[in-house]
Amino acid sequence: MKNILLTASVLFFNLSFSQVSGNINYRNQVQYSDSNINIATPAANGNFISVKGLANVKAEQYVAIFSVTQTGESAEEVNKMMDQRINTALDLIRLNKSTGIYVDMISFVPVYQYHVEKKTFSKKTYNEVPAGFELKKNIHLKFTDPSQLNDFISILSQNEIYDLVRVDYFAGSMENVRKELMNKAKLVLQEKIKNLEGFLGESFAAAEKSISDGYRTSLPTEMYKSYEAYNSSSLALNKFTNVTQAPKSTTSYYQPILDKEFDFVINPVIHEPVIQVMYEIKLTVSREKEKPQEAVQPVKETSRYILITPNGEVKDLSLLTKP
Image 1 (cartoon, helix red, strand yellow):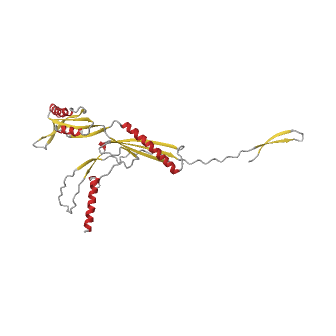
Image 2 (image 1 turned 90 degrees about the horizontal axis):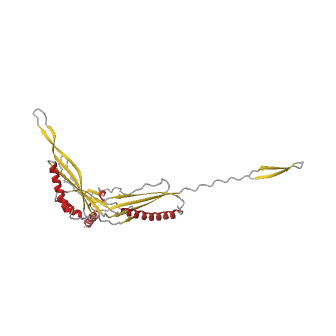
Image 3 (image 1 turned 30 degrees about the vertical axis):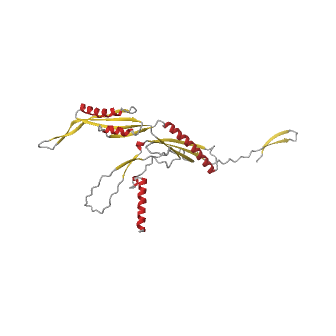
């Protein structure tokens, strides 16, 4: 009975942990890519200090792009059908005065199909013949409230426009965010320098220094991942058995850059896709050994000697003496 209770407890713990961590860990197939910032070290020799900062910036404007494709037997028919679909949808979207609209022409090409030519004494011949035209356009919608995207999708789908190509995120405060990152990194760097000087018991004031820094921005469009969560049965089947596998559902999710490797984070808690700005600064301190003092050569002294001859003459003699 104790074994049964213990097994049930373990199963309950595993199931609970799986629900908390998410289904992406169900089959251990998710790998987090190294999308972190990594500035090159400014100098090869010496001690270097690195400071990394991350800012999560909420978007202020969005641009959604929808793709529209129309085919028809003639150019006139294709343009008429395309205009009817787009104009009907955009008339409803224009009721919201804050929405910006732009229709982008992508392509207008003829479409061909194969016509089979049968011959009595030879093989069939497949000839390409014009079958109509294909027109492609993109609808760009600029908006400020992300909830408006649901309204756009509802209106466009009524006119058989379903293909949401992408959604771009924009923020007008990027310059201020970069300045804030740099100022915070400067304070953290000064604190690290002070701590390192305390550890080594010396000052870096007169030491030679090299510095390098840089920014990196990640947009939500670039940060979506996909995975499959399923559990297949293990059966001992022979090689002649026919197995038909069911299609597996693929799920996409937003995976932001994790803040575990940063010295500081601006707006750390996020609950929606955001623009992530990273900043890193590296300082290298060259600590050269003191040069040995050169030996001082002794100075040779010069002494003055006076010689008096038997005749009473006085002569001045200068002699060099050894040290």
